[in-house]
Length: 504
Image 1 (cartoon, rainbow, N blue to C red):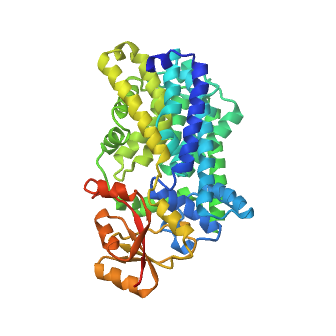
Image 2: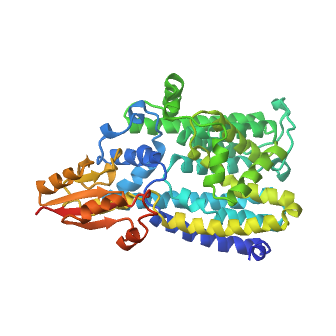
């Protein structure tokens, strides 16, 4: 099957794969609710609801008074949410659905354009098919594109900027592989249309404004244009002017968001260089990203991704993709505090990298072990594509759906043996206290306080405390027969349940 796909007409395959990708992007938008990392909620959605006057600014984290969060992305989401409010759509779950839908649609459009742009790097029909199979078939694209994160937004905006700045360059320039520096940049003769240079500069500047850890990508893209592609110095000045426009644009929105003159990137750098705040969130060894890519990227697929990326960096040091990806990887490997999401913006280059390396090593990749690993990778990828698209990004989001739906009945919620440190109040219809208890006597005391008491329980072993009392299970992550049958294997899993208990 894989061989037949690779031998298909690339244009016909492109259309079918794009429809396939649209389907899974829509599925991810619908079912992949919640957030992958807390920052998606803390630094984006909460800011939106603050502007909607349904969430107090005083409850925001330290980043709000420090003014380090960009307001452009929350502002875009605010205007979408405000439009929904005008037609009386106020459910936070419906609003976040439309925010995911908008983000995923924007990401898919960029992916579509980038997949067409990638053909300038590839010579063979089979290589183009491999790139398209990856662009529209890799399991993590629908999931990440449904995330309302700064990393996702920044990645897509940078990709648009890169395409604008390089679309008029020759294939020879784009596919240079050696480091042939010419430091006399005033002799550069390659020209970019001035509007493309300014708009491209504004976009790569905005990418950094959305997410500062992306900074090495625009910086080294400009260096590549200047030193390798030998673009005119005047164009570099025009790109720099575009970056300046992005700073002014971001400052306007940051000032609107914080209520005073602010540029969030400057505030971020000030906090980092004066207080070194990132180190307070923990440090990891230099090989963290290699290890995480191999494990989280799902082997054996992640082996192909890692090998292809390393091969490109080592064998093609002058290539545009090397300059766009290696610096951001190297910088974040050198910084103590590491999170996998910091290198998420590299994923848009993975399909081209895999196709390029296939093109370079096609004859050597026909061995039986490689073919077997490739077939296993396809199967595993499809499995994870289905699971990641249908599964909530944050499983407890369904608990909040239940509480929101039954908010009039639930005056307080007792959490037994599971302390909720960060309550997602955005998803609560009204102020609902979460009261943490740890002793069985406290269960009886709570039950006797009022006619109906509500308890949130996450450990399967704790379910018996409520099933032996006058309680009924109102919500559960898993069906009762499932938790009963597999209780031994699920002991360490979080199987959220909500019980309503009646006083006798």
